[in-house]
Image: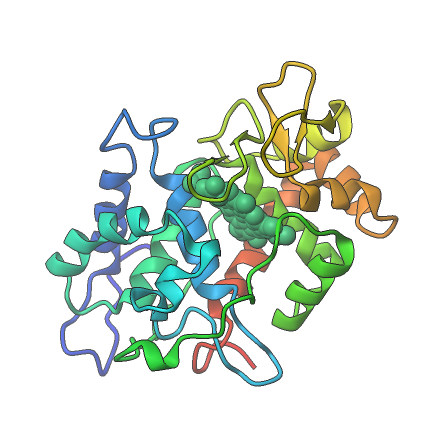
Length: 276
Ligand code: HEM
């Protein structure tokens, strides 16, 4: 729904097309930021807002935009995301009728689309919670130093299957790790502001070895420029994940289709009327 969508029940008749345009306008507003785009960090904000969902209790998820508040804003996994939240603040001021929760998730989808990715199914309807008492507990987002069992624990808790877990991981074709945020360092690909299946090509076609440094265990290619996290390597080391990695490395259309469906599902988790 790219055009102006009129949502009954909202105070203002919101023009989501205008909000999308406003997001597109800030993406490359600062050439000095990282690789010249805020797109990757906006995708990460949308994902971390949503990825706290627990299917069993219906808690967490993007509905509520609870990352505005401590303790969630201070959870280690969310280090650096204040940049993304602050970037969207002027858009929230200009279009006060959109909830933060809708704005953050929409911005993630717009970022993916603007960087050349598939169009992501997204609908409004999230409401902001009033304070930090609604924050999910720490520890619901994945720990990059762990392996396949942990990936299945975390994404299984949200309701994803193996194929969806691998598809979602393809977002690491975007952006980079920052030593001052996560402790890890470097980009996964040479084109970190273009959405593509390059991450899967790098995983399968490049050679990866442990990086020798004083930081956390991560992997590097021969050039020393590209990196993989232990959880990224787990996708090629796990017998059941690997076939999907191979499939997506060979078939970008298939990756785009599966990613769009899985990311749309992620954005809808726990949203009234949009998820179980
Ligand atoms: C960045 C971990 C899954 C999107 C990162 C970083 C870590 C990480 C450590 C670096 C943060 C920094 O230093 O700035 C993980 C782990 C995952 C996972 C352990 C699952 C096992 C996902 C998923 C998505 C995603 C499912 C989206 C669908 C991103 C993006 C960045 C990023 C776009 C780059 C952010 C930037 O450039 O600022 N991730 N991630 N990740 N992640 Fe993930």
